[in-house]
Amino acid sequence: MNEIKLFSPATVANVSCGFDVLGFCLDSVGDEMIIRKTDKKGIYITKIEGFDLPFEAELNVAGVSALAMYEAAKPDFGFEIEIYKNIKPGSGIGSSAASAVGSVFGMNELLGRPFNKTELTAFAIKGEAFASKCEHADNLAPAMFGGFTIVKSLSPLQILEIPSPDDLYATIIHPQIEIKTSEARAILPQNIPLSDAIAQWANFGSLIHALHTSDYPLIESSLHDVIVEPYRSQLIPYFKEVKDAALKAGALGAGISGSGPSIFTLSKGIETAKNVKQAMNDIYSKTSLDFDIHVSKINKQGIKIIDN
Ligand code: HSE
Image (tube, rainbow, N blue to C red):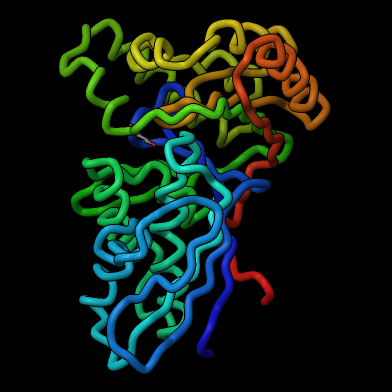
């Protein structure tokens, strides 16, 4: 096999109570990438469609993660990477993670799978860190493994796969503004009150239990963020209005997707997820903001090979 085409999915990180450790994978939004072997040694980004991004491998997220893996694998040939980007950079649904995971997953397939998914995620962290100026894997892990994942530790990298209830759907609204992850991190406090920490880890533990047991009311009562959302929600226009409308329309919970500006909701059943979409749409339609909305099943597979 000399060439492979991939669907590299969008993801939602943090999921309200799991800042920097929890994430889940979306089904209906993602990038496509083609990875190809080439005789010339090195990593070459030969095509980028969708957004204006650097072609130099050292300056491109997909290239940085590819180079990290290339240096470890030391093949006697090189790779070309084509990126068909659908996920807007800075949208809060794992744009950089999709690129970082895509290049290393594709190269690994063409090399005969010398690395496991955790090892591939470790290479992808280099690309993600290049983009966001900090090492985190809460978008990378669900893009690589699918479903819900917990990043238990970065060093050594330890990723846990959490089951997704079958009837759980996400609705994501993406206002067309850009929030840089590095800037959204810079506004967060370095210390938090113990009472907030207690509330957050109670919700986090309860959410994980609820995902294991398909306990939708417990999912609902656990999807709260008392630590990060109060700061970052100020960066997102009409956040409170959208959240209130989504909850009124039946969502189990709503919060900031990753570092924003996208807002995610989780609902039981596709009908409710569509009602939530309408409710969120109604709020933003009254403003001058451009936006798009997606309803998605939880993608249990993660990145996948697609036909050419
Ligand atoms: N956990 C990261 C953050 C995700 O919220 O900063 C960034 O997409």
